[in-house]
Image (cartoon, rainbow, N blue to C red; front, side, top):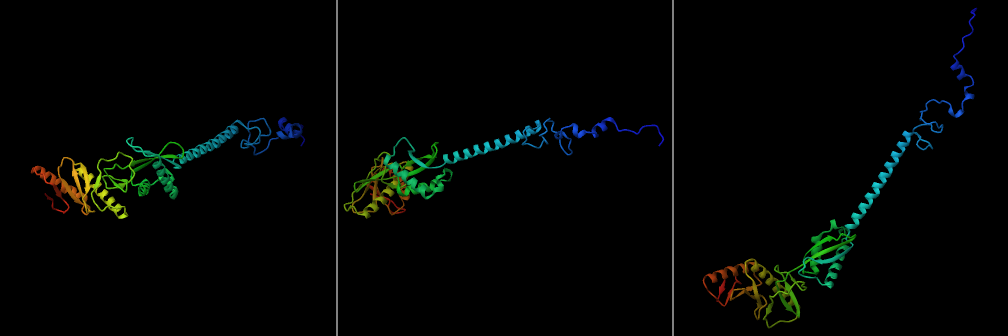
Length: 312
């Protein structure tokens, strides 16, 4: 109590801060608790997480630019992907069709090609999902065309490289014989398919009808088609066995028999459409081999009966 020492005063630093500190510093520069220092002298930047401030710290600014780049990159990738998908979709779409022949050996008439195009468009209209090339059922389309145009042997639908355009490559049948019915040519290929439009060369083999009871009735036309199919099959089978048919004719007063002549063989073969063409072709080649071996030259050989062959 009686000490001469003066009352202890606080340090100058504390005394300076405690006396008039609020009056000596700006109110905005006050030290505040729970605030993160930004490294900026601006008093408007309260935190490094405040990305929308007018002035950002270098770290916050770099972070903000990185996010913007990511957003722009994602949007650009989505736009490019959308354009790519749209292009691929349109390029595979079958909107218009053009016809092209499968070989340079023959040319399809323009009128016939237009008919093919209309039929293909009709098929695609009934099956709209098949307008996308990967979804196209080409065997089904081929059957649809063959119902109206039997001369078509095969087709191949290919993309032309232009948007919405495709080309159909058509292969037509190769006729092996022909027959004039009511002033019009009817053709047949080696498989026995009868058709009336021929884009290839006219076959040299013509079926000669010696029947005296021909008429223009529908029954005669049906019989003629059956004969054509039979002759076409015979020609194909004989060709596979090394023989070439040079002549085919229908005997008088019959509608179910036919006579054929082979190249290098001096006699005729009598056949019937009521028996398999393949079996009769096999019997004919066996008889021809036997007669050549025996040096025989009959007037004709009859192979109409199964398991037997008659010659005279």
